[in-house]
Image 1 (cartoon, rainbow, N blue to C red):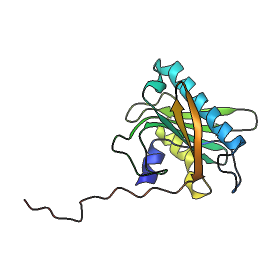
Image 2 (image 1 turned 90 degrees about the horizontal axis):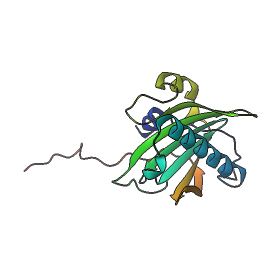
Image 3 (image 1 turned 90 degrees about the vertical axis):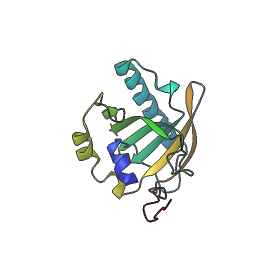
Image 4 (image 1 turned 45 degrees about the vertical axis):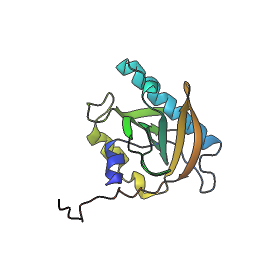
Length: 168
């Protein structure tokens, strides 16, 4: 379920990294470059500022694809999910040696500003099948700062009452 949510939000990312250096040096810098690329393009196309709402940015890195998700609260991968979690913007980037290109940019439940979900699904097929690194950035003032990284592991869905019968 959570994997589907990430895919629906178009969360995909650029660059490659080795097993040992999650978020260190070049990888965390490339993540920051993609955050900047996404929010600058969003602000240019929408006329809105993402900084007013988003307090965190998650970046998923898989080969030459990056997924950036701007949120408030905790999605549940670096800690327990927060009750106030809300996604504001999803951005998918493909990188080559000489450039990075956004192939999806959109807010949840709205028409995308760049690309479409159908094309994003085709490009992102197999994104989570291999080694994916997740980077966490926290907004401090007018910047996102790298905080930590980990190998991406799909979060467990929240517990539900679906197996319990409540009688009043």
